[in-house]
Image (tube, rainbow, N blue to C red; front, side, top):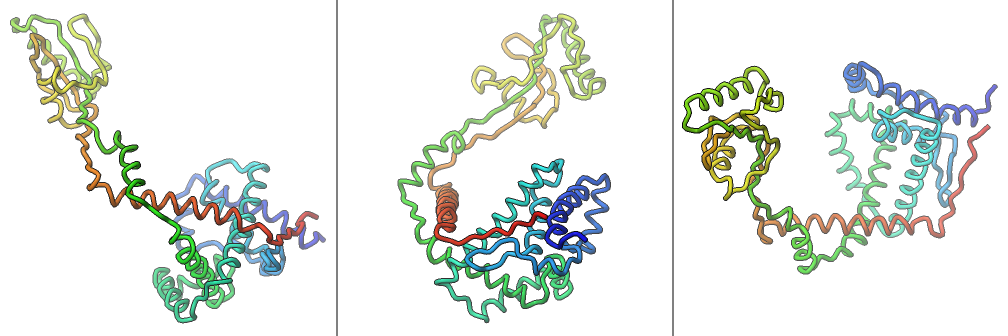
Length: 337
């Protein structure tokens, strides 16, 4: 008989491979529909998985069921369409276990100073269950995540609120944004906040005499060919020396004024009527248009503040997470046979 620990070690690989197989299935829509109607049990019925310890964090246990579920989630979210090699399978397992350990460390740190009332837990739990679609949705969530009952779900909510409360109390107040920060960000983003109008075209220049009626007939014939024969693709025209096609030209608002004004009124890939400019005839096809941008500091101040706040918060959280393992007693259980 395979030792229980060895059995689950082998099973970790199976979880990863089965997940990848589902995502790579040819009939993905059918699979997704079936999953939505009846989500799979991620621990696949192994009720004793929760009793097998894979790591201890300052004495707090992380069990096999948690690791299996995290492996499943991580594979689905990040690696679903990639071929699952033995190297990648090991990477997924290691990353999953690292996430669980860091979450436990974060909770332990937060729990030293943050207390969440039962009333708050009940309130948030009720709101979450409502978003799940009621009790049926809750039962499906419990089953999918290997939780025994509603109390286990409430404990998950309490832990989440504890960490969130710590961040709100200790990390958020450290985020300082000065007017100097905002002005510097604005100056660095000049290319984004300020840009002239841009009109890009395929330009067809005709060499015929503008006073010869045959020139206009030739131009109209070419225009019809582009639209009807070549599906609005002037690049397919058979060049015969009477015209030249210039692709993806950025028109100058002053030097190409007449073409510029005609082109900006076209729909994308629409072909203009013949345009005379500087003694030559042209057809233009609009291939790209960007309106002018002129965002003042006042107009983007709130946007800049939110962006800087997000970046600074991420940096502070990264620094906080980095110091969490210091002094912690982290034990790994060897799951190999």
